[in-house]
Length: 351
Ligand SMILES: [Zn+2]
Image 1 (tube, rainbow, N blue to C red):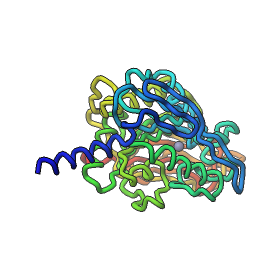
Image 2 (image 1 turned 45 degrees about the horizontal axis):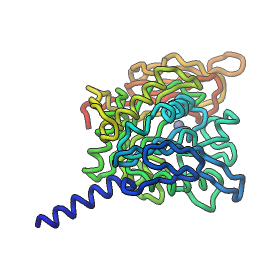
Image 3 (image 1 turned 135 degrees about the horizontal axis):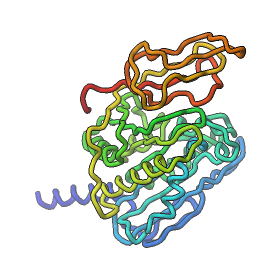
């Protein structure tokens, strides 16, 4: 009986700290020995289109512990999240860490270089919709496959950072997406609360098939790694408060996972969002918002309007539900069917 229990405990520890026992960890071309930070690239070779090199840092502490992956820049113009991880690579001292941190600060290089929002301009695909990827697909699919093999499979936990894109005036929030595995979901929920953003979207509509995961977070979660997604930043800006919120969130999750010393008090009384009510434009034209990110709106309230190119109002956007403006379109360019705003419907109680 006791031996059996010991075996169960041992297997739990091994699964939680999958890479802790080896002296080095290699991700792409970066090999970190204990007590060191190594940098390199996850090489995605050319296929049906050009290849790419995704930067990666591996920070390996002297003490054993789990491996946490921190990823940003699937959308290469969500700058606050990218800058947060660039800074964290420099700020994390390997000597302070138990376990290993894999940091990928910028997945979508072409989007960043060419200032193209939402997609990878090489193949026109979002780099957070094609997980687990495909080694024989276009660049986004090959890069997603490389991220699955090099980052997800080598990690025990994962945080995917985003921020409002060039055309999104966004208030900070995180996502908690339970998988149905109560033990794993309790850990991911605690990670979201430790991360500390005060608005949390409960995502219950994620895929359940790891081979059709779509999102990086889902891809990791369905492979048994407790994960979360967090967003802070808006409309191309790099505001210190957004960058700091993302950095502190990662550090607090590391404290919760006992990878850093210190406590990570969970956020008190977060606003839980049970559903997102999206508003899409019914016409092409020039968009004028009448609300700001973070505002609370009543169902039916005017949240903006679209004019023709001569200034004549064609359509008024109204809130389909009462809730908080998670983001509103930050620029006047508007096409029929594109997002005007996302309204977060507030849950009556914490899930
Ligand atoms: Zn994004």
